[in-house]
Image (cartoon, rainbow, N blue to C red; front, side, top):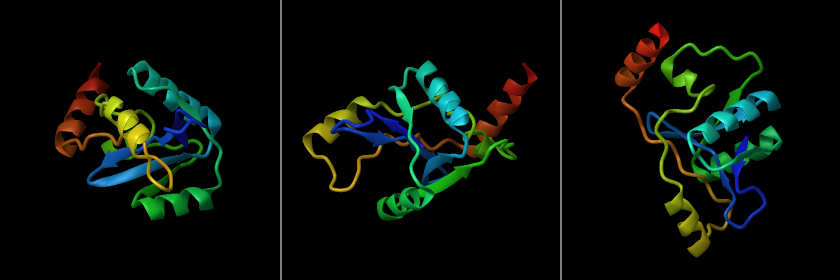
Length: 135
């Protein structure tokens, strides 16, 4: 999985907002996590650090936080526009400055979460991706 400000008091976890669900990606391969972190950095997102944490620990955290743990297996091939977000982040991201300020003022008792991605209209997103595929 990917963490922001790893090891600090405002440490957060990368999440995606998919159809009203907050999803934490669990990358099977470190190279996939590094590539995804690089794509986030290219979008001026804070530096994300891949962290190897047991599947059970991630699933426990997600269950307590109301998130969904989503495995990204080695060689994963997306079958839908939503699944493509497991290989490449959406172009729109939430502003992280509010997250960092809030975490510094009032950190939660468990772990802090990085900002979730805004919910996108699935039809519009699929149309946009199909147009990108033509390029």
